[in-house]
Length: 331
Image (cartoon, rainbow, N blue to C red):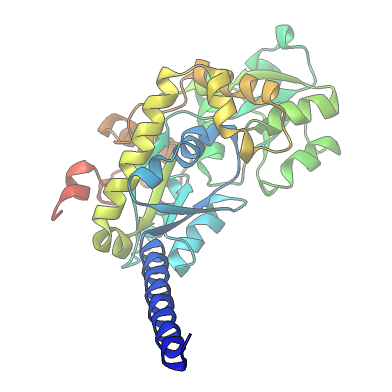
């Protein structure tokens, strides 16, 4: 090979390398552009449709890349979207209501609902067959923090059951199981898989599913800031479609199939237990069949918050709830 031929070959290789680099940069730019950072309030089987959407590629089908983070409480997850470290938060709706009430300009909006019932289970040391709501009178129940939707719904249940337990409401979400193990309460409200884990560790029993005690409510929702919503309606529309597909898939498949699809998100639980947890939630009807939030469920949210004295009667919170027509506006 002549010197000239060598130079020509090197030149061609440089050109090829240049186009490869440009192509890879373009892919990376597109991936970053379509990246959605989700911050979930906690990790639970309760949020199975979200994990299904990830594992079955429904987000990818919509051209979305998802980065999932987990907080310990709605406050932390909501703070992440306010600060811009996350795009979307999976939280209780009350956190958006509280910020809206403060008159923040870039207040959070709610554009989809993942769950429609309380996913907590009441755990206690008595036998399940001996359980009666009146047993809670005067007893200590570890609930979620004061002002959270799980706390307010449990308070609502005590109101309609006409019982007066002592509700412990100052223990953080991640510390509550340890507090119960150490003897801080007679009962505790927990999501799965925590409920079964604590049941086994403390010789307790799962006494009641709280989902059967109230009406439909936007219990766990997807929220983002007003600015993000107004600037990313096409992306949000794709996000909603992916979650809708997952909800429909869960409705049509059995618990073991669902458990198999999400087991990677729960490395400390075996398939048998995950299947059991999924079956519980399917039986209790906690998952929405569509993400749209209806007026009746919003009205019940208001009723629950007013009962807990966290919302003044007559306060209009409808502005923070966005439906499909709001999302598709301008698309």
